[in-house]
Length: 111
Image (cartoon, rainbow, N blue to C red; front, side, top):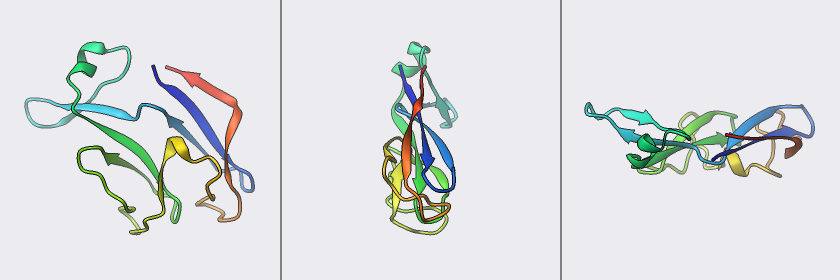
């Protein structure tokens, strides 16, 4: 099961949703990534990696980081100020640069 949460900027209202499990994947016969999610346990058993959603705190770009080929910088601006979207609580808002991203206590979903 995966938990979904949302972060809201304390200043501008920017919001971003995050999931605890990322995007587990396996490679098909052609070598292409195929994503597998709960409750598809058969596909999940084939998974060899995970693409985790990240956010660049410098420019606001959302991108995936492959567990088998990790990066430590934003693919757009090159900043090293990046974060997994599931652990954004208290981080500076990349949009307004003035507020903080806070977990929305009224938002929680389970898949």
